[in-house]
Length: 123
Image (tube, rainbow, N blue to C red; front, side, top):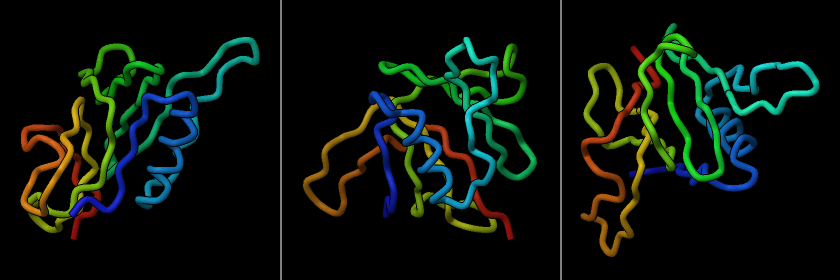
């Protein structure tokens, strides 16, 4: 069951991302501080000791894993909490998906099975 989901490619996407991560219990989700004359598009957060960055644009977001400049980059438009994906030690994960499918029944998959998921809780 997907408890939370958000389309982050909107005008107030940076605010939506920060609020969404906070709802999941992920702290320190503020945009990176830049000089006053620069517009900030990057949000930094940490899960289980690993740093992640989200670079926001109104038409496309990118998840950066590791270093801001040379880390792996994964494009996405949707963020969601997945509580159905089997994980070792828990069943909550933060998912990132480019596409979303409209569901007509409880058996339909809203997000593809092959999208990136980051385990949120460890036991």
